[in-house]
Image (cartoon, rainbow, N blue to C red; front, side, top):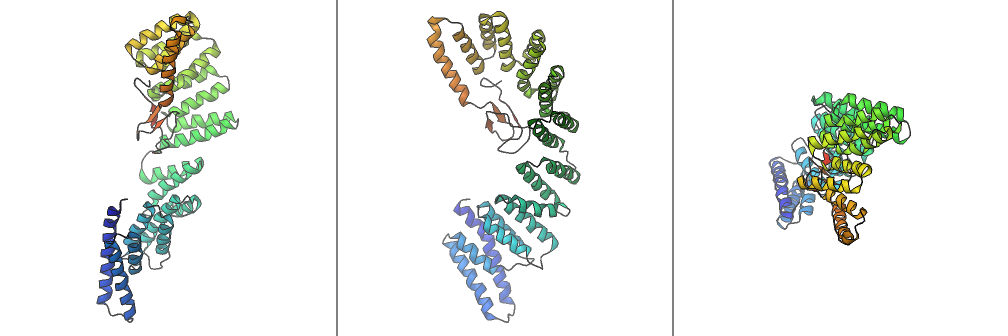
Length: 391
């Protein structure tokens, strides 16, 4: 926050402090020294404010503001300001001071607890934050906010069972369907089982995720991967091909996997027909390159070069050009070999520096597929890039 903006924020705090001083001035106080201290701190705060010393101004005004029903909002705002500035310790002290007040109303205490939970999250004190938020999640005006923060904690801790339970509670509290997110949590658990070698439980959870959300691409790919591990290639192909019905943007992720299964089944003709179908429907570069590999293996490099050249005239692609140059180098033509090698180096460097995926929500670029965006934390928002440098 810019210094000028920060000073503007302090003006309401100064006004509240001045009001409190005025209120005390109208009351008959037993101790004149108390009123003098209030006035002294108030005018010190104004002086610091005018001299652009916001930290000292805050300290002076906070001495003026007693915690009561009329100043709680000011204290909450001040604590939030400290947190946004990165001064989490100060924010924690202010919110703890609020909660300790015996005369605090129930709603105000709940709000202060929620803000203290945010403070703990900002400080990385996840256990303390969880304890506070679980208290709020049991009921009250801030139940929804508390459940959302709990889900954030459980995602950070990768405690997927608790994340599922909290998401289900949030569904009931808001009426919003969170099945797409819950399905990802179940996929996370399935991947954990798969990594430990427990493929039966992994397969059960992947299919459970599909039952939770039948358009979960990740669950279909994971089911196919587990079935491939089990050498059930026919079933794996069906799982992978389901992705086209769920979200066709992710089909390129399955092509290499499907190709592996068809090779294991020794049925290259079916793979050829499948890839040609994809080419007709979408014109993507990934099925085109897979078809070029099939033509090279079956008919030789020259036929593959001819095929890629024809496709590039219809739809330019850096990836396609890179593969074409690779095949040209393999063809063994010494006259053009040196020039082709230079171009191949250029396309290789260009592809190495470019992202392959992009978040459709925040624009985060990535070279690997993340099911949850590392930047905005949205699930299923990162997809393959389209265009001359992508699909």
